[in-house]
Length: 386
Image 1 (tube, rainbow, N blue to C red):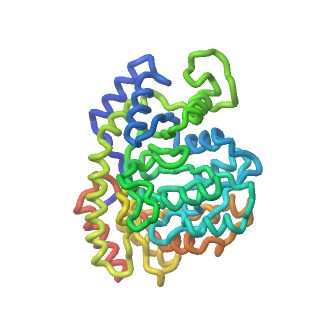
Image 2 (cartoon, one colour):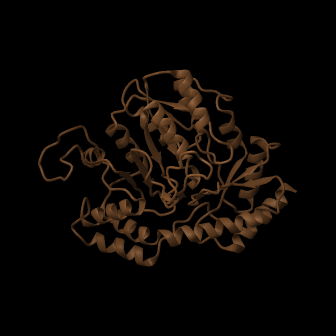
Image 3 (tube, helix red, strand yellow):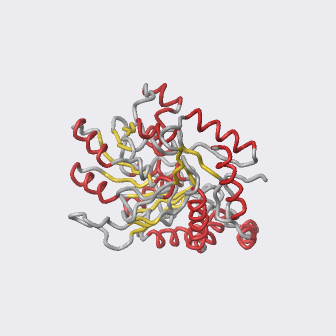
């Protein structure tokens, strides 16, 4: 049996829709783009959205629209895909890492507060929180921190479209007593649509905001700095070719219409995995807090603390020998060669992220993964551990 790590949920009807666009003369900034943007904004509960060619491009444009620039600092997580830190380097700003909560794997509000108390620096302009693996960050605590220190908030929800958050019971101030969708937090947020995500446009991203200023700036910058409505000739600011084509939007529209069903399918796969994993010692599945509904991006297991990176790598090698694709999620950003060389980071700087990374394995996961395949994966894991 050969089982891939991910497999996009694309129907024959959606493939046909893409073919129809190819026959059209409107391939860029056309009517399907506007329809896709409206659907995305409505889904997240935002006033505006701007479609771009990747989640990374979306983050970059948000950073520019918030005027985060050379010499500024932004607090973010080291346990993420590298783009959530690189987006600041593009503008000469510097990411300042705060370690994660071991249960949710999201940025730790308490560690973030400790950093701000120690720094007492005007250089810190914002916090970027990632909804890691589809689990919303602790948005109540992050809003409290941003209010206290007068910081901007950015939501990287590239992995979490469709997830839901409610303020936890017991808080003195519960900001959201009804569910709030990911993509609706902070000054601006980003979804991403790479093929391994919940839904895909082939490649693509969506900026979400309630700010008309951010909206207009991002629309202009994604299209080489032209007028935001593309009505006036000329280039009014530095811009980029970050446009998303109508071909991609045609697929995205159909995928967005099916998103709730896709999330339910992925949820069922994750729940079945959880039942199977619970019978295997030494392994813990991802956990979610009672005040959130995850939108499952990947299925990651954590080996217990007695295991190390060498053990994990050995298990992965044996899984691959059985035809089971698997991967590490994530190598912490501060341990990436470029960051070590550029900033002098080393092992031990962010111990929670490092420990989780060393013991984590991403197993095959997608909407149409069959139970017999999950059985084969989990039975193989059990034999390997025995």
